[in-house]
Amino acid sequence: MRRTIFPLLMGLIGCAILIGLGVWQLQRLSWKSAILADLDARILAAPVPLSGLDTADPQAQRYLPVVAQGRLTGEELHVLSAADGPGYRVIGVLDTEQRRVMVDLGFVPLGAKDLGRGALEVMVTGNLHWPQEVDDWTPPPDMAANIWYARDVVPMAAALGTAPLMIVARRVTPDRGTAPMPLDSAAVPNDHLGYAITWFSLAAVWAAMTGFFLWRGRRATP
Image (cartoon, rainbow, N blue to C red; front, top):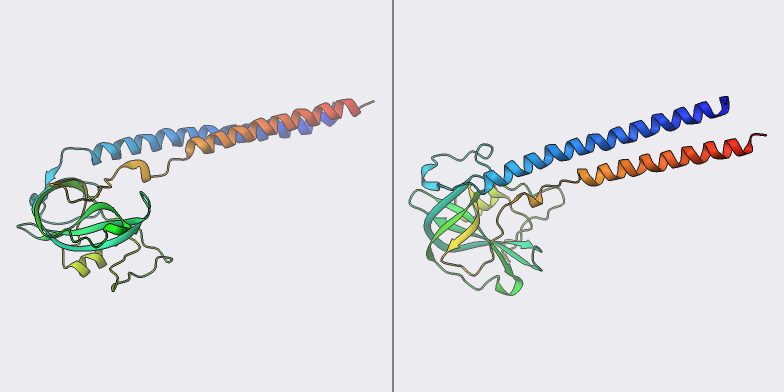
C-alpha cells in the first residue's frame, strides 16, 4: 500500500497541474476571441472623413476606418509580398486638399510592378495603419529597383514626400488594377485552443502512465 501512495500522489498532482493549465488556456481563448471580435468591429465600423482629422495619432487612430478623396499621383513604392503568390504591395500617394498621404492599394503580381498606373481622381475607403514589420533581419530597401522588403511608414513617407500616414485600402473607386489587402484580425495569432488541447492531452498521458505504473507495481507485489 505504501509503495502506491507516492506515485498515486504524484499522478494526481501532475494531472491537476496539467488540467489547470488547459483550463487557463481556454480562459485565454475566450479573452483573445473577445479582443479579436472588438478589433473586427472597429475595423469594419462606419468610416470617418480623413479631412476631419487634424493630427495623426498612431495609438488612438490605429485601424480607424476612414474615407478620403483626392488624386493618386502615380508615385509608388513596391513592397515584396507573397500574399497571393509572388508579387508586390503597391504603396501610392493620394494628394488630398489638406495633405499628401500614403495608400496601400493592394497586391499586384510580379509582372505588373511597373505598369504605370498613372494619375487619377479616386475615392479610397480603408483603415489607418502604422504597420511594424521591420526587424533586425529586414534588408534595407533597394532604392534603384524600387523594392522594399517591409512596410515602414516613416521612411516611406520621407521617400514619397507625404505625411507619415498610411491608409490600407478596402475599396478604391475607380479600380486601379490592384487587389486590395484590407485589414482584419486574421493576422493576429490566436493559438490558445491548440495550447489547451496540448495540456489536456498531456494530462491524459500522465494519467495513463500513472495508472500503468500502479498496475505494474501491484503485479510485481508478491
